[in-house]
Amino acid sequence: MRAFIAKLVAAVVLLFARAVTAVRAIWDESGLPRRQAIYFANHSSHGDFILIWAVLPPRLRRRVRPVAGADYWLKSKLRSFIGKDVFNAVLIQRVCDEREDDPVTIMAKALSGGSSLIFFPEGTRNQTDLPLQPFKSGLFHLATACPKVDLVPVWIANLNRVMPKGEFVPIPLICTVTFGAPTRLGSGESKEAFLARAQAALLELAPRQAGG
Image (cartoon, rainbow, N blue to C red; front, top):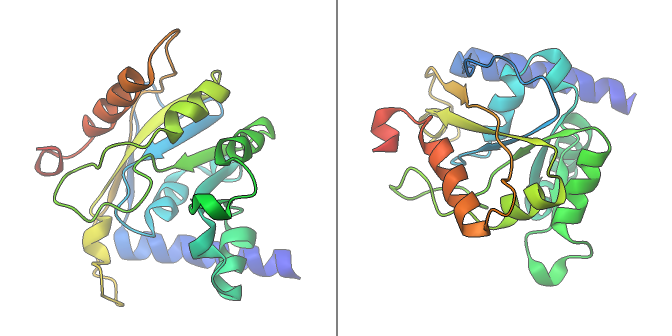
């Protein structure tokens, strides 16, 4: 029964996200991702991963898991149900002193099980005027641990305007989710060089007004 309810809620969330945002996927010229991937994206709303999840074709959606903060998604029984049962999220404890396991190990385990991941390298929602905050080192460590998994940049446009901070009623606006060309960590590539390259690849997908 719990699994059935989770599937029902997922279907409702999918329809609601599409109805409110009219979200449209823009794929790289190489086409749909053919392999397991880490979709790394800009982050300005709690609903970011939902839009990526919503535009993926069913065969890709079934195997993708968002990486999310355990402190947020385990705060109540409802959030826990949505995070764990509906989206099968990989929950990471963001407070270092409260961690029992290494976050990269947890994510690598999910990848080794065949899942793809939705990952936000900024580490937290961007509430600044900058298009992107500096990337944390997590994406580099994950790429190092799983060098054969494709890294796909994804730019989410307009969602922060659909649900501005402090508002409870969404404002219907057309959102786009733009997927870039897959990449991987280069042989001998330093953390600094890799993160700069990943950030540039993501910014390249941003609308001009967002990317400067």
